Image (tube, rainbow, N blue to C red; front, side, top):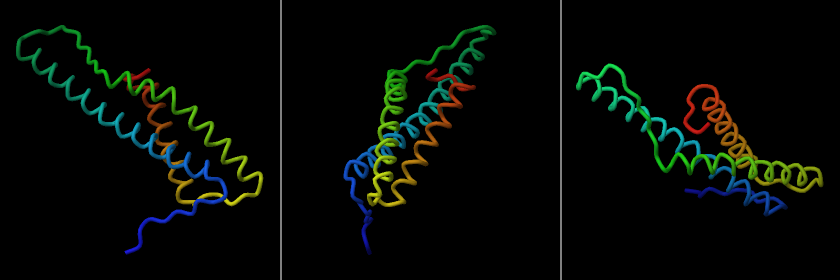
Length: 129
């Protein structure tokens, strides 16, 4: 069975940054989704406990140190995306051979998914923003 082989192209910086970009954005998206599930579980547990104890009005605040980590990453990731985009543009502009299209596509999809998650957070979920 052949291993995963990726064409590195002429720009090693683009290749490495594409891998870092894909990995960080994917990890951030997965961590965010996991935190949403944990937050919803905590809300449900708190609501059930309050209802069982007979309290009709209450305030629930769910916090986690990991929310702060997600917030730091959400401000750091656009810098990585901007650097990756500029390096991709410059490499293409100089007519150098790009790294594997699958890697560029994966990085773009990870970036797009993280952007959609951030938009959902700003619009309705309000876990970070």
